[in-house]
Length: 202
Image (cartoon, rainbow, N blue to C red; front, top):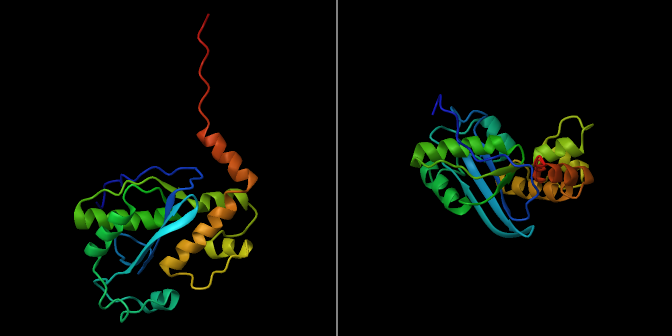
């Protein structure tokens, strides 16, 4: 897995109404050397929340102090949590077959993909929509389009950010604001429009 390319699902430029927002918290930025300490997922049908999944995860190594400061997740909180093998399988059973959505979601998917493959030999191949792509399109002049910055732009509360379940809710609110922006509707129409058929020579 160190050298093989991840066989992830497709990154889609689409505006689904049925999807599953996913977010994780980790001990660092690298899926190769860092660990997942929280997973959350929220299912939507017709843009309405219908089901949720959330779990803390007990890492093999202690959580660094700066991560606890950022997320509020301490070593004491995860002491009795499931390990990654149990947690990632529960997540997979919840999200299997879902259209995944997230903010800068490649980060989350890379961690989830590697953990699922390492622990259970399962390839996580759900297609996904990255909301940050819409934010870049709709807000081209904004300096730094982090989730909290974009949320602030739309007047969406970021209280409790950097906990996975809260970040899922923030991501969804941003998505539902952005999907009504004219430039977003136009770019997704162009992406999904069927190619013109070449006329047969007479």
